[in-house]
Amino acid sequence: MTTPPTPVLAGNWKMNHDPASTRVFFERFLRLHGLRTGATVIVFPPAISLEAARSALGERRDVQLGVQNVHWESSGAFTGEISAHMAGGAGARYALVGHSERRQLFSEADADVARKTCAVLTAGLIPVVCVGETLEDRRAGRANDVVTRQLGRVLDAVRDASGIVVAYEPVWAIGTGETASPEDAQAMHDSIRTQLASGGKATVPILYGGSVKPENAATLLAQPDVDGLLVGGASVDPQSFATICAAGA
Ligand code: PGA
Image (cartoon, rainbow, N blue to C red; front, side, top):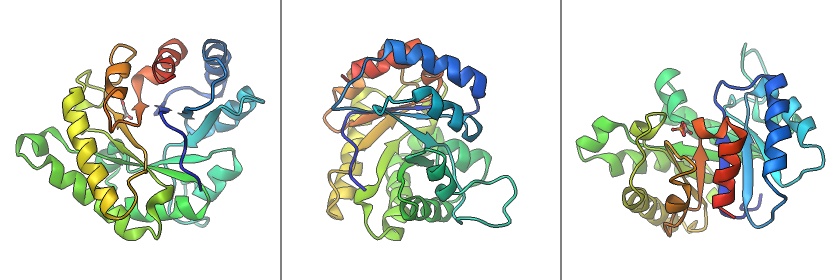
């Protein structure tokens, strides 16, 4: 699996856009977002809208698709779950793993995130591994420790980390309108880069996520260790996501 070209501009729709509104989104987005090489644009629709996204994209190979979550097994009696293998068959090339909403609302532990990352790699997809501290962690001065632990569990589990993408998403910045300052984001990305480099994987892209908007995208991307953005709320609207993608051009 090759490392995606940077910057990576990724949109996590969360539980938004059914198949019909997915088609409307892409109709507008593809008009606004010109064909471009040298950057990677990924959209993570709900799994039920993946097929609608794939057919709406048609021949546009410059926009990739991903899923927001997978199970670690490839098939079996796991009601309500989908596997990385199935996601690949449905057109996904990426899978989010360990998003903080999965960790907090669905009790995903570090060990689950590690298993899922391995499953995504085995299926030939690229895992976007999400890490990030809570406000409580940050106030207690343990933001770096938490992120190092979360990433460390994944790095210990995978045989080769060169096929992963990391997303640093401070939990207190997600959906709150409060973005990490470019300096805080850079400081954490630098620490993640150092951790990856100690395993010889300094080229793994590191994305920032948490209240990214058209107004702050360029400043965040200008930080030396910010290789891309993982956008939640602002990716649901085609105009604002296209503006964010243009900031990475
Ligand atoms: P947000 O979400 O941009 O709405 O803060 C980011 C994310 O959860 O990936």
